[in-house]
Length: 334
Image 1: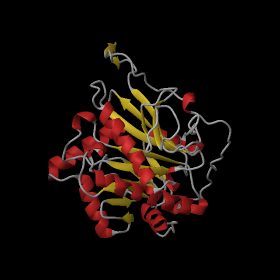
Image 2: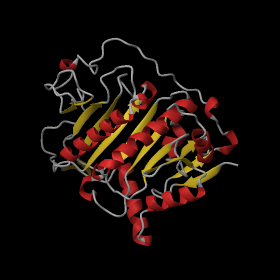
Image 3: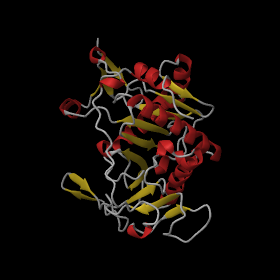
């Protein structure tokens, strides 16, 4: 029989459609097709992108030239503009402001044919450090309330460029999905004086049924009420509210945990397109006891359609316990 499950953080309900449960082979996936051709993100083409904001060059070298391992540039077609004032104002009963923000591209490797899952651990760690450096810099801008890091991997997940990259958008408001998590966490903390994510970690470690991978620093789990089949969370075991405030040693462990789950997903689901987001505390709440930063990883296996848009419910054909078992049993190359 199908189950309704409630996310304990946001209060969102999902339907786990056990009567039509799907295993990995049952999904009709859109293949990631590489088209080739000219790529402005490749090494040697630095002049074809906006001037870099940040780059790691182990052997030195001048800006906007080859020799980099990670490079950050402004998005050529930004969702928001960096210049100007917010000018918050009313429009009758409505509210509006100028579209001020930052939109950047983190180019994860100079090699066009390498993706995040196949990079060496240290190179993945460098990408995480670039995330941190840019968040810390943008937090100095008093116009911004939230900095979102996300990755669209593959055309079906919304990527417009084949070359492996992530994106950053700094916003003058806190996104509603993050606000729901923060507010839900705050209510739970007010009732129990404990972080709900820390409690989830303790319970999942004890039960084991939704655990995919467990290390000294990170727990990778299929959440209890997942919106999408094979949705996965990576949670730091030690409480920390903001990604950018994590210790140096943590990024090394996170690089391993991220590579581990991407390898398992590629093996079990035949390298699907996916979306990845880092949920961290809002700028004005970056140090607190109630919220817990984490990574959400969602393979692109189903489509959101009328039922989801009309109700706010998500329909998931794969129970998280089964998804965790499949990913846990996946053999990943060393």
